[in-house]
Length: 135
Length: 149
Image 1 (cartoon, rainbow over the protein chains, first blue to last red):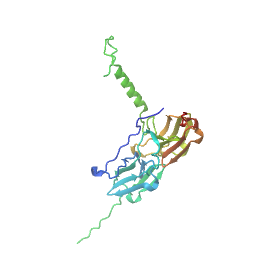
Image 2 (image 1 turned 135 degrees about the vertical axis):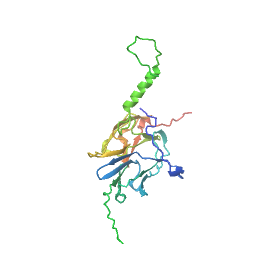
Image 3 (image 1 turned 135 degrees about the horizontal axis):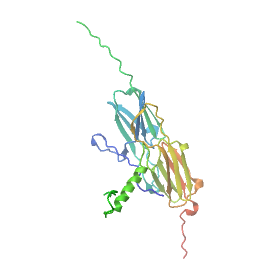
Image 4 (image 1 turned 90 degrees about the horizontal axis):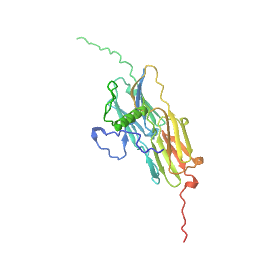
């Protein structure tokens, strides 16, 4: 049986501030699972087609931004398209991090097109002793 | 518009709307196939297929699937894909804040406009993208016809 409906609906992301992107390549928000364990938060993001060296992770002002870019398709234009149920494009998604994340300890790995980001929880803030100087 | 049958009163003549029954049935069917937590409905994964006179190329995005969990079969002009995507085993006490990714088993077949040569089918899985090269059966390749004059 041949399926011609678009089975996968993907949300295209908007650049912050509704800016237009200069590149015409579509950018999608990857599907994510976010799991909280006792010691860490783990983000699993589906980014098929993105090799490890094209993943970009940044933390700035408490915001974690995941980006992945897909290398362009090579020389397949000589074939006729019979079916196109999904579009390829880059990926981008951002998350606000709470104070409980130890931002210096963030680690990430990629396997089978899935980006796994581990965000360790910060050790509970030690009570800070404030010295009171007397006059 | 739903027609409810009131069993307490004798049958009365009601306007029977067969289309509302059909759309109710359709909705029920859709719900039956709809995602339980994280699973995609029938039709996963999405396919892209392109072809020239020698072969077809089928690609599908299957992130998180190990090569050993995929099975591709070719028969006649049909290519079938079966596989499963294992999900992580959460530990007790773990909590999910988001659960958007599909998981579980999937199976899909695609009928192509020509017969395939099963002996020369090749497939690769890289970065979660499956690429299957499906050569056309020799007998089904286009032949040039000489025009005799």
